Image 1 (cartoon, one colour):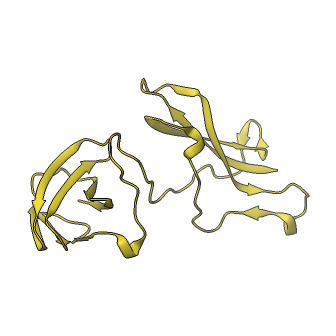
Image 2: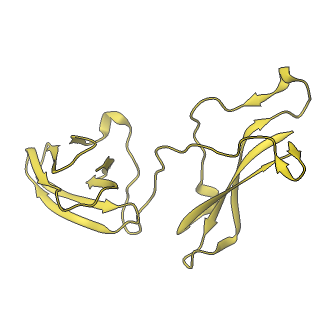
Length: 166
């Protein structure tokens, strides 16, 4: 028996990317008996690089535990810290010790970015659209964000990026 998540890649027309998928087992029992049951109980990294270049994702689930055509297993999953590369930039998230300092998070009317040098900071929405670019100076930089809609954004300076939420 098993319960698996199937992650599908979408092409530039938001259609299936020629069957590009990644499968991840949330529960699996190949031998039988409850003592051999594996269930994912913690946050786990799933590598999506086999999907190649995609413009979107969608998810399906599959299970062998069925009754009358319906799954006996609750069909849901949680996702956190999805990392994306915005075309033409390098927005890989850095490890916490190199992440830029942005506060408050969540924010409302402003954010403060602490910078060691003069550099540009760019705020992207999650589709990769540039929302705001500002010149930072060394030290504390207060940026007015009152015009931003509620939602999640990526703040990028140099090779560092961090997700913020309004």
